[in-house]
Length: 489
Image (cartoon, rainbow, N blue to C red):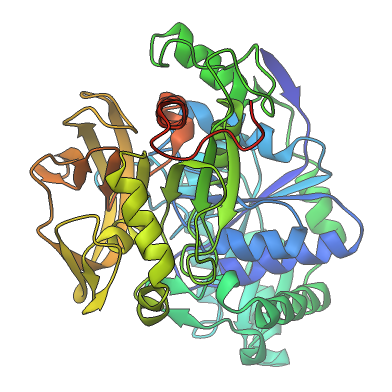
């Protein structure tokens, strides 16, 4: 059902990566939250790490808006879902304002997201090596696409009072409002690693301090009243509000949900007519930080009880586990600790050997391997992983090449690869996916109930994945081979 969404909103963009988008976006979120506003945090693109900082700043789940993986048609509904009941939404862009999926025009760019949300854009400019030229730069970004509304500029890394005066004078000539000026402040920098910022879960206390410092910097250097006023100029957004239960019902109507799966008629916290509520254990903790909030919401709506566990600390799977989800993260950083937790490795191996459904993405794939950088892992897969000098990064179009607990043979979806490891062999006897773009190859492993791959996917684009996995977990519990109903059904 189409409704009118009236959440004030801003898109924080930049001419290029490294300009300070995360600094400004996170600082703004925290500064407005400190004022008592309910702030909805969003990130354009497939990034998992920045939303963790957004969540710290706002106290709400950081959510991604990815027009490639989910399709442009889902950007506004997912935004409406995440921002429901909020006073303000802040969307951090990805790369440069007009950069998107390679060779696909504006697809998945910050500019496309801003247009789909009818949101004004604030351009964060690294002014450290320019003065009057800033006006030409901003003019070019403002005029490149007339449908993108540039509402103002925040100048970052400004060196001195004199430097600020020159920049302001130049932008005044260009007719572009300056909504903030941030000086160089290394004390609030957040540490980075080979795939971006260090995730919040690995440095929570320091991350809280960083977010507080960012809020202070933004509060001192930005015109919060002007920014809030700009956000309120966003017109009503007429769209459907995404709902995990309705998404599953639509997938069922289209024939994409296994028969008997409890979807729209069933309470998301009660057993469905197809049997007892299965427990789906989801890996978390510092080593497994990559996940989309909608995945757990879809699993819950499909009738599962989602229970988190930490492979670094927990020596057993959660009681009654009948489905196991191991997402992305940085297991290479914690390989010794993961390897040392022999009881859990044995439990995961036994669960997989018994035919329990396992969905593993990227870090999960490495954890299921025989070894990672020479350290023993779970040994579910006849493969070994290691760090590499080469970064594999980019969007992929994929098709399932076999039936699995996650997808039916022939299921098509879009995903994203983002890793600096390799696994040998790269595919099992039965691969998980066949990539159709930008290169043709098979990848991943399907073995029993295990589906393991480097490919990160967003299940909102294909809700049948969550329904199929929940049905597999229910069937596994019903067979008595694994898990069982935690509360007796």
